[in-house]
Length: 56
Image (cartoon, rainbow, N blue to C red; front, side, top):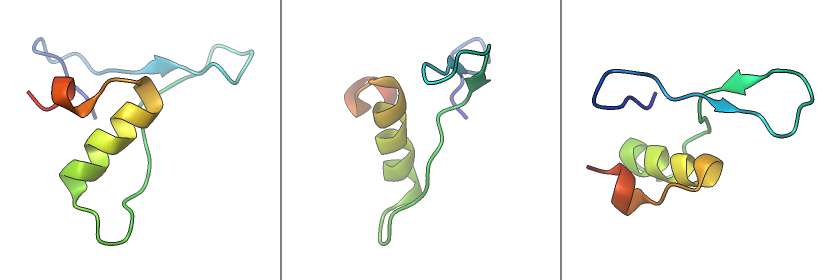
């Protein structure tokens, strides 16, 4: 779950669905991958936000 400094949860509108559909970034841990690295990778894959900006 991604929270901002105000404690608000990030959800994104799905662009592959014509309905009003929202979801949090998600994904799985690759073999040998650490959870934090997974979170940053998945966040970038799903939102385009690079790890350098999301790790602070």
